[in-house]
Length: 215
Image (cartoon, rainbow, N blue to C red):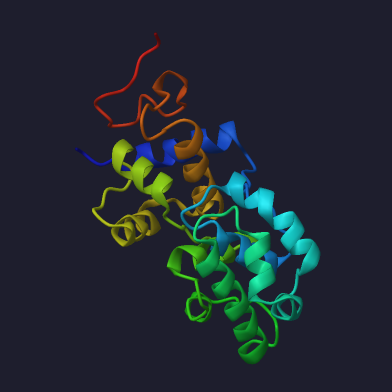
């Protein structure tokens, strides 16, 4: 499959911006810390599922010190509706303790520091940097990986390869919101099983050969 040209790439993002000028993540949070916790909880889970569990959790603890005081057992009970809740509860308490011990209770503003926290990988770090601190990072999840490869925007066999390609080709004016535009496009339009091509704003630019048609 041929990759999109530079002009096509710019038009791709221009149309996504026109359709949704101020995209926002769908996870609910109250501050940088609760955002970090919510993103950790969202691994292999839906944002909607996480959002059902976090209000009670954040009412009980919305700071690292409060989370450590709450303890792993109570955190586990509050998030038990989320997949892998046992491991996630352990990681949430552990990362909270690490924030207290090494970062003065604050969420660090660097990818290198964030990925040292329990349960935090590169994707999670990029999401936090983008949403909490306004950094133009791109966190490649399953939706972005699919959209980037399917459309010809940024092809790669691994998440890391797609991220590196996107870092190179996304025009500066679109970088801050590129992450959200691509996730939302993948979640609601360029869906895995049956993409909604008839309603896609970049249908004519997309290189996907098996576009769906109106019934």
